[in-house]
Image (cartoon, rainbow, N blue to C red; front, side, top):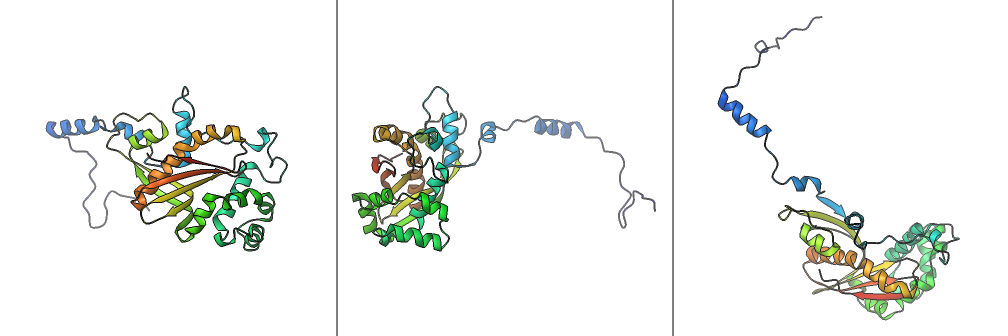
Length: 265
């Protein structure tokens, strides 16, 4: 069956384009030849994770010190206590964070029993259970900061996801990245997950756990490396909950040391 140019109930389709008058043609040329005034905004993503901003901060200027350093893997550290275990350094860190997220705060005196419970309830795998360093975990919860958190257990939020809007200038100030020209009126949506947050009525406490294998002599440099990340977390939480983040702590499990930092933006 052949085809034709006539649709049912419609006139015959036109086969020629009508000529444009000069005024219409001029307007069309102006539209097609125009440039978007905020071209810089088309080159920057409107949404980013804290991890992504960490990577961009490292790549932003080869002549500056990286703002967020990546942890050295266990294979590169001959003194690592997890070198010969079944799981990688990253997987071991994940296991510790899972435990810190799901164990019952009132059971800090029985962490081994809590670890077994989390395996039974499928929060942890048996392999993840074997790499947990329970003495390191107990040292934190027996510390002054650990006790301070347990006293405020009802206000504790663990592995708290957040989404917050930042201006490019705010991100540049926190991360040290160079701000793009022409983006003063734009914004970036930042997403991340905070390890432990204490949401008090008038203030917020923030704790970030690190599983890096680090000696006590390296702690000042490590704290300096992670400080911009904590500031970004703190800035997001302050925006979301409309109250200041008054204190931030970095706790290094392997070193059993806690660093208190100024998390103001």
